[in-house]
Image (cartoon, rainbow, N blue to C red; front, side, top):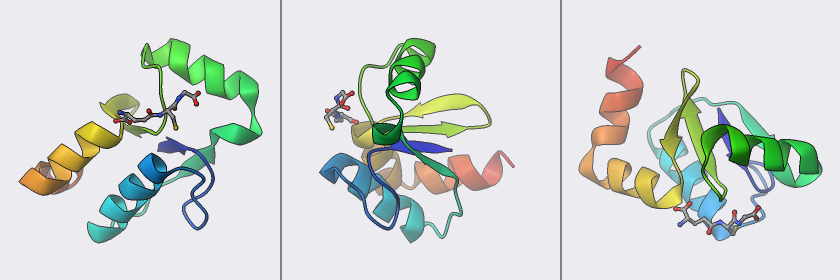
Length: 87
Ligand SMILES: N[C@@H](CCC(=O)N[C@@H](CS)C(=O)NCC(=O)O)C(=O)O
């Protein structure tokens, strides 16, 4: 599940856009929520994860990370491993 600014088709932030491209590059299907549409969810997710920024990518209910972390995982090939092997 991907909490982002805007939508996968219309990201409203470069950080969110980069993660969408990385996930698409791995041929991953993913759910998304545009946090700019709901201020309560925007603050609630930050409190839940104790992570102050968006985007935030979750897998099986756990925060994987934001843009910087996803980019690192993607470049090292670990994103694919994480998303496929832990199924
Ligand atoms: N280094 C961050 C960059 C993301 C970031 O700085 N996001 C900012 C600007 S889009 C943010 O979400 N600020 C808090 C907010 O808008 O609620 C990452 O790896 O995800």
